[in-house]
Image (tube, rainbow, N blue to C red; front, top):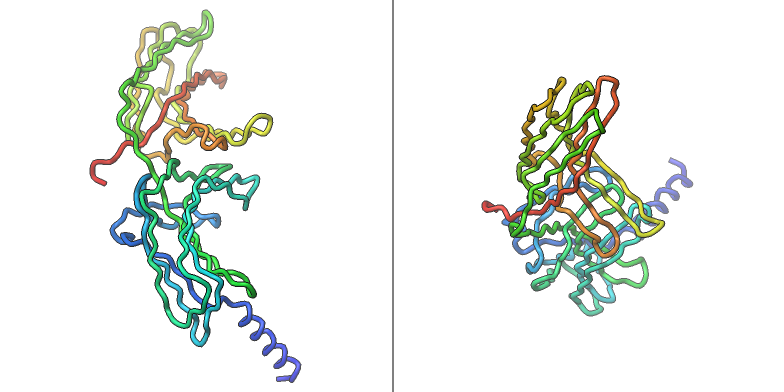
Length: 313
């Protein structure tokens, strides 16, 4: 082995050691083992399980700082922050904080051995749900910072999920509409209500009053429309989350087709309206008829989705 190669190897190891963090930082929740865990997809596509909270809950836990063997950690203070953040994917890396709380855990000093810092954020106001969309995400995170002058601060993150629940709406009217093409097609459709919880069933019927075109099939779609930005910078993304075949073959005048669509299998969120003037998420039922020449006729109707507290949770 040449002296040059040996010297390069020693230099590389020294540099790696110099930039290696001086300690391991971990964050745990006080009731983490007993709390429900829900899957969240990370930036790299992997799915991780994170603890579930709701608004007004107390978020408490422990920060553990463990210096690597033989190292001491000099610092200018240790703090933990609870952040609620909105990130637009076209402006990736820039977070808008709508919730920001901080607890100072330690004054400047040195850490020689494993040290635990308990923390507590009492009855935290978390008004918005965790959301991972096409162009925007809303997340809640605990951020621990070990502030250091040289070598850079050490930062550790721990995500958690927030879901908020709504009571049954006091008024929930049915949706009833007549649509058609003059002298060709006239149908009446009815859905049993306009507001549905995420485990609900959409019940309804499609009634053919006039059929003078040859209908090949009829589908019911659930569509999600995510709008981000404002004014001229508004960006709208529409996804079809479910496609349910109601009818295959030609209907006749006077025929009534039942609708029964279970929402449980689909990845739905509550309707989100103008969250911090940043984004909205709306849901639609889209009735699609296709004739024998593959022309499509459709009628879209907005519905409201909400999260109902599960009795067994």
